[in-house]
Image (cartoon, rainbow, N blue to C red; front, side, top):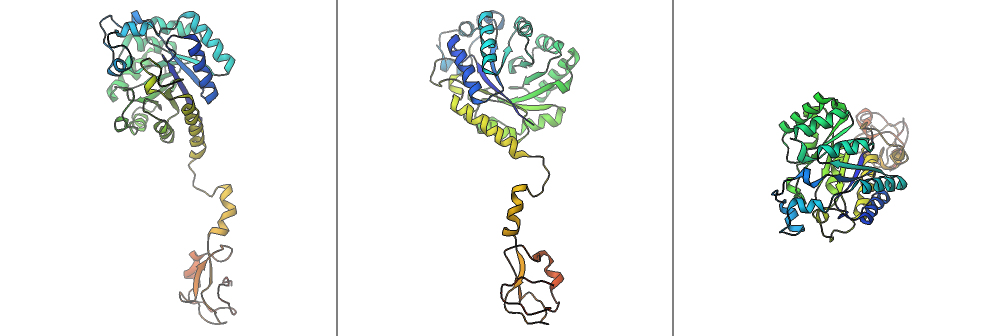
Length: 333
């Protein structure tokens, strides 16, 4: 099954249209399926007194409020329209996360094919009810969540009109960057077993290896923050990968998809030509005279595997040789 790869531009456009378009170009060039931004009205998202997260304080002005920071990162209606058009030209699907009810309605009006619920909204009952009412495919991030939080959110989405088979639950660690020791990637298949849902992984770790490992563990969606340059100012750049890393991640995931196969253990087509070369046959360990009984002393297993399999050794022990055999000669009836 092909993994849906979401290149998360987020707010790494810094409010600049040319940078936002360059992020779309980078995502398309890397081979991602979707390029995702964030849609919000800062005044509806946070109070004036809301403090920034520790990682945001380290990467933006310490005396700036969270609301003021977000104000600089809002995408206008015109910017949305231009970005959607640019993504269409580049052959990649535009996607965005809404962080308030009006933004949800706005994105639905733009024809979004799916809805992303960010980790911070998993306990927002009005928001979840609005999401569920659309009946669209939902991608539910679960950073900071317990199994109980996930169970409650799924129940709200289903009651509002979105069946469970249209919901994909993303395991996530909401820290930027997320410490490797806290990723707990095995929680992802545990969520799949607990709730009978498709699962994926929203990756905030440094590097690309955890996202690749998630695919091997069954992730059908991968989301990863990326930036044009990690040294740019802004809250998320330092915890994002750069375009060359994004391209390597996409390529690696596609290779893992091929490598996973169908789960049936059998010789592959390319192995067949090597089987007779690599396996062994029963041969004479020394000269064997006609009528001499075969034994563990005069039989040995050696390549190639074109004769009698050594797995049949017990069948031949004690039989008389039908003719003389030279050393290294394959045994035959």
